[in-house]
Image 1 (cartoon, rainbow, N blue to C red):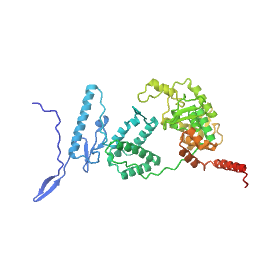
Image 2: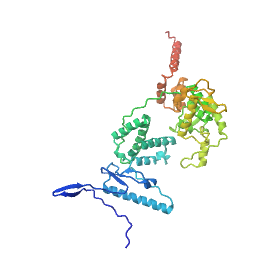
Image 3: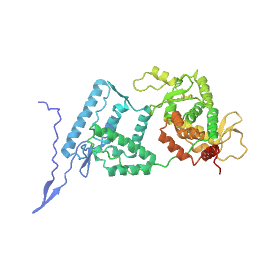
Image 4: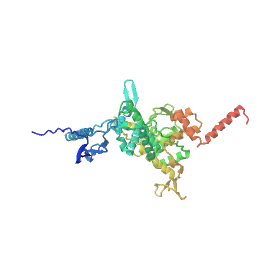
Length: 467
């Protein structure tokens, strides 16, 4: 008779065992529980896969129920037996097909699993377009932002990602926020908590993850101080000159678009060249809000755009296909973009754009020196006074950011005498947002107060009001 290969169910008795130590004496013997790949610490089981299991996609995780209760020894043994069967099945499939099948992940077991399901929801995969329900998903830039924030959280506290979602109480949430604030900064902490709050709200409304309430809603999280920084016209000129000298004219184009249209960096990098109306206004959709904005081309901006058109005429740009998009369609879309990486002939990735921007800004701040062989060299941090400048340094630009261009556009328009509705028609801001920006920047641009008083004096003169 052959022995059955079917694994027998393991039954563990976790009750303590009495042992005789002498006449009339008894003590409680220590129970040792051994389950493959499962370790115990003070009665808490945790799956700890070895290198071979990690190589095929398994990670360590606490063995807990969705409500936070730890597995009993018997439940942990059953779980480990099921996991071993899953591993064996995947390995057998690889022997038969030559390909290791993807593992089926348990939902809601951990915060990490809940986040993965949130990212698989229609909000992140293109929206819902069924019958009368026509609902677009989030923009690629917003999706990338959410993923980046939660990757930062996973690096910051891997153990937290393995906790069950119902185990997060308001005090735990506050503690995580405070820790993130201390280690990563206030902006990062607020962004991560906002992403987690969105995930919990989605899960609670759909009965996912055994979540009864959202612990991220009422945390003590102060608002960061406003960034009171705008560009000046000479700084824009210095940046553009540095970009042109470095062979990066598209970076100057991006800055001119920012200051003359007030659009976000993400929208500028996805603006298509076909967007013109009969009055030669630029017309495009903002990727974050979906708002349509039509903007007349200022002469300075039009000059840059026309030069870009001439450069792009012979530049074969290669696209990056999105989900379900062919390479041919991606190439066609990429060639319609106003701003691309003209060196790589590719659409800009956000991180790479930031890197190139920083290089050009540094060149503008420290200046460029033309060598005897015609090459350019970055100027010294402390000029000696006898440098042969191809571009004089502009030190004040060193702390400026691309994100400051949007607020710069608002303040420049305000300083030029534009009304709030006129500014909103160009930048796409909400009225309250424009008021906030102007209030913050009035103190840094006193000429706005000068203009206001001049208008008041003119009005008083018309009324015949004597001093």
